[in-house]
Image (cartoon, rainbow, N blue to C red; front, side, top):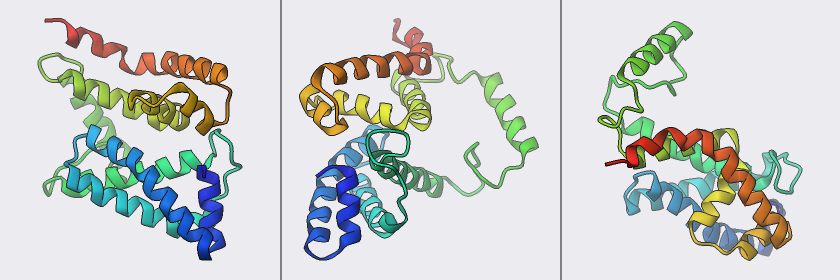
Length: 200
């Protein structure tokens, strides 16, 4: 059952809804890996998987995507929910008084001031950033701009076969290989500044 079929089954109710729930829990393994990769403990990741599945269930009737593996696909919609759950978790875990550029309450002047402070500190300075942090931040920006491409790259990073990825994104194996190659080219500018961190 693909992601669009899951949403249709949730909306249909009855036995279809039960099958959709089982499929969503299988998909939850992808979300869990993403949460753990981004620094959450296994237990926290599991809680966020549950929260994500509940939000997908509750929001299924509001899904208006056109299917397929495009910008408005069911897969991208589910991943947006998962990533929003993770952002909300990190935001609520910050000590009182901490702010970030993600805070919606910041006005433009405050946001620009924070951006200037960050640029002075140079977040790409090897002394202040680990390779993993650098890659994670770059990949998050990539995922925000290209949700479907990021999902495909994550499947490959999780050692999923190209044949399996091809089936999930509705392409031939050859087309999936080319798509993954293009995804990596699109990803490169987001993470190439991390390469100096690899040098001893």
